[in-house]
Image (cartoon, rainbow, N blue to C red; front, top):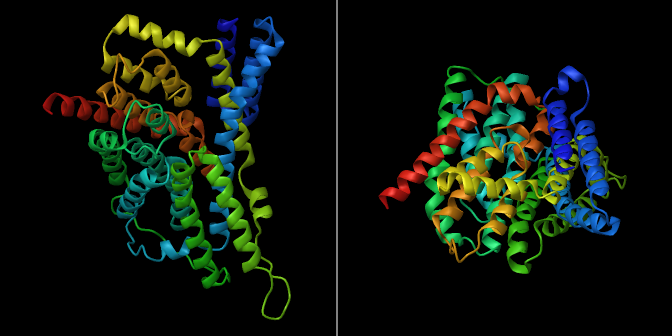
Length: 422
């Protein structure tokens, strides 16, 4: 039955990959795949209660990611609707698209370590789209943002969910993961940036007039509030040890209160006609969230079948080399979610074999974190940006995947050289 579930997953994955040819929304393919994989699991397990408990446990983990994504996208939508990003875009004066790409990707790389790669990717994609008119340009920038966000999230315990898992599990410490992975992460980011920036050499940004009459003061308030609340999310997690989505939901509720007071009335006593959080929730890309739900359901079903753990054991028995195993797991994270992969790795190897801050754990954090950039649906940041800019699976595969793979190889090479030298 596990083989049947794997076949269904592969067929569903192909349906997502050829979305344009099939004219079937990727959310539908993902949801069908997720439900069918779990249906096979329910048939496979003799006790329905056991299967139900497994599904509910996985759904709890999946929901935490979806609620985080929902809150982040809503806050960004509120900032965008109030022209809050105009405050940032007005500070960027360069007319050169290549220089603008460098600025955007640099901000993405460092902000993703402070916030997280998902939130940063959403924010920076929204900002870059304010400058760019051509759809193709937006897609190239979005692809670079995905690479930069995932690379930046690796070297901070708050930047990527898998790094956070290893940090909480005691496999890494904040100081050591930063010290030993920041240089390889920079290599992952800079190699694709140098190549893509050459594509825009000599090209100029076409300035457009902003005819939106939203009050600049209100835009300032919404932007500053949004940034402070997004920064509040990792701080809340550290202080309370609650899952990240709890801080994000609290941040969204504070934003709701702020906008309610800010937009209550005009000076003449009439109600203001601005977008509310309720309207922002309606404007966000719901199909992308459902797509993410379907993909994670399918992957969690494979995890329940112990397919991923079996694969990890096979890799260990076959290659018997930490770097080979880490590299292959990184490439696998481009296809399936890196969260269950890292969870399986944590269960496979204990701290007696690889103690805290062993290079193996740091290498796993690096490869599974940046490997997700190779395919658009390999990371939460990629899925979010895919929904925002309507990036097709095949376009990303043809244009961006080889660049992300080049950065992936560069990061691995720098990490291994670093370990040999120091």
